[in-house]
Length: 191
Image (cartoon, rainbow, N blue to C red):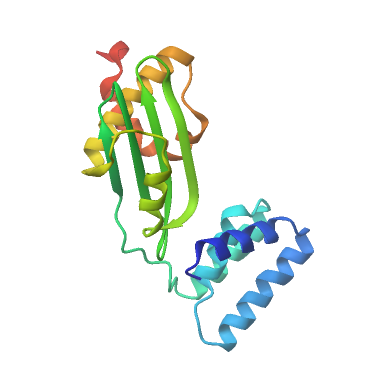
């Protein structure tokens, strides 16, 4: 599955089913992909992302593993677009997931208000990154930037946001592993 809209639609429809129906859908995907000799893994991956039942999650993971994981390999790398600095700026981070898919986090900030706009796209393609960049309400022009540098700039902006509001924006939690080392380095209380 290479279309993010189709993958999201399938995952949302799957999540709305009861447990028995979800198990039947998993079995149908496995049977259909075997019959057509394609890997079940990239079709099952969006389902695993929304599965709340531990037993079904294990079943999904087992089916993905049995298919050899074909279609899950990701050749993408973390990508960052950045404008401005930690006082005023915008950034878009795209992190690889599997296959052609990336997840996207976009932020705009200023010194007085902290983070003023966030965008999160849990399942996008590399081609969607520019579209999301253009949709950010920043007057600054985003440019490709080394991801580690962008994360450092964003971390400083996030610290300012936390000073103002007492907490980080909710969407940042999904990307916390990228910021953790930067936040620890920039924490004035730890120095």
